[in-house]
Image (tube, rainbow, N blue to C red; front, top):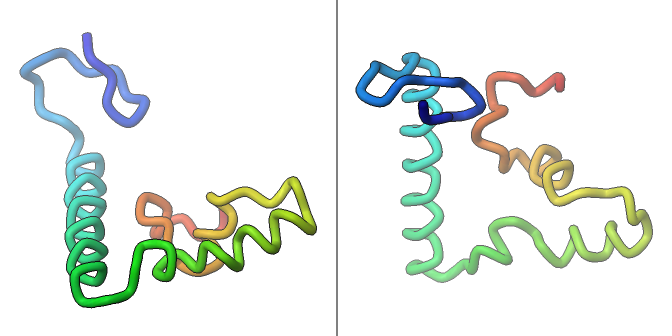
Length: 83
């Protein structure tokens, strides 16, 4: 048995469409980020990492995941923004 996105699946069985759609979305976002890096803005700039570090220094409970949610950078949760 293999695990994909927390779902138990037997090898060779079809993955749920939602998992595959999310995987495609993540892969596309990574390709887009790579293109942006080649064009100029670094991944650090794309994720506003300096802002994250400043906020984290002021609030140690502030996570990178939370930061990405706030700047719209979380892919797998785009359909679930209320979480």
